Each structure stands twice: as structure tokens, then as C-alpha cells.
Image (cartoon, rainbow, N blue to C red):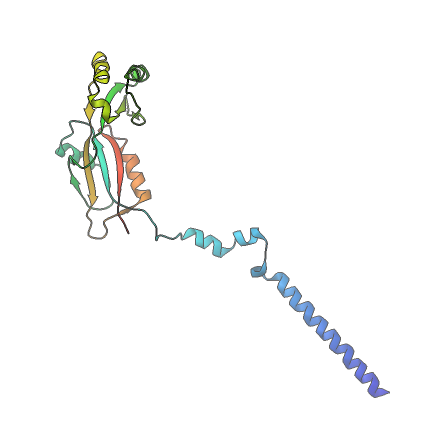
Length: 211
């Protein structure tokens, strides 16, 4: 009889032990943050946060130079003096009045007369907008579609309004620093915004490099 009681006691104790173990592991699983399926928990995890702070740079856009359009009449000395007032981050060289960029023409108009002048220009038979008008401090630059430069009807309208057709002076600034020969797109955009505030600079474009 005593033997039978001992066996039952051992059996009950074993069952209690198994149940306790199962409950213990269940509690651990519920508390494990790495097993959470809550999207909020995953989004705010330290790993996710650090990954967003360190984006991949393999496909980063590399800008090897800036193509700068100056107003007509800007000579090489003046172009260099203008650019000396800006921080280009890296050492650079200037190619003045390059001829491998398509010619671009424009007219200068008073800001108060811009809309009336554009209305008259649009009366030309072959009128097409070349691009957005460029706002300077006290005047606007109206860009002119290249085929209109030789259009007799368009030239007649210009003459009637005593407007002078002008041409961009294109220059190429290319980076030639001992440490690196390119800048990132963010820096290039900051340069573009700053440069285009200058009255003598009409347009700034980027020259990308591969790799």
C-alpha cells in the first residue's frame, strides 16, 4: 500500500513539473521582443532606426562638374571673379565659352511688362515656350526657343518692341581636387540654388560621372 502511494505521488509530481515547464516557456515566448508581430514594435526597433540613418551609397549620384550659363557679354575674367565668391568645396578648373553645349537665347524684360511682352511674342506664327521665365531682382529672363532665332515673323515682333535677342555664355566648372573629383547631388543642388541667385548667372546644370 505504501509503495502504491509513493508511485502516485511521483506521477503527480512529474505531471506538475511538466505543466510548470510548459507554462514557463510559454511566458518566455510571449515576452520575447524578437518574436513580436506588432508592426509598430518592428518599425520602432533600434535596428530599423539605425538602418535608416545609414542608407546605401552604392548608387549615389556623382556630380563631376557644373555647366553654368552666364549672361551675354560676360568675359572670362568676369566669370572667374564671380565664381571666386562661392565655395565649391573642391578645387576646380574653368572652361570658358564652351561650344559643345547647344546655344540658348533669351531676352531681358522689365518685371512689370513681362506678361504684356509675352502676349505679343506669342503672336509669332511659330511661337513655342522654351522654358520657365527666370526671375531676377528687378527683371525677368524670357528663354527663347532656338528655331525662333531665325524666324522672320518673330524677329519682326522683337524689333517692334525694341527687344534685343541675347545668347548664353556657357562655361564648364569641373572638379580637379587631389582628394576627390566629384560632389554628391545634395551639395550640387545647394550650389545651384546659390549660384542662380546671382544676376549674371542664368542657369546651372549638372555633369554626371559614371561609377
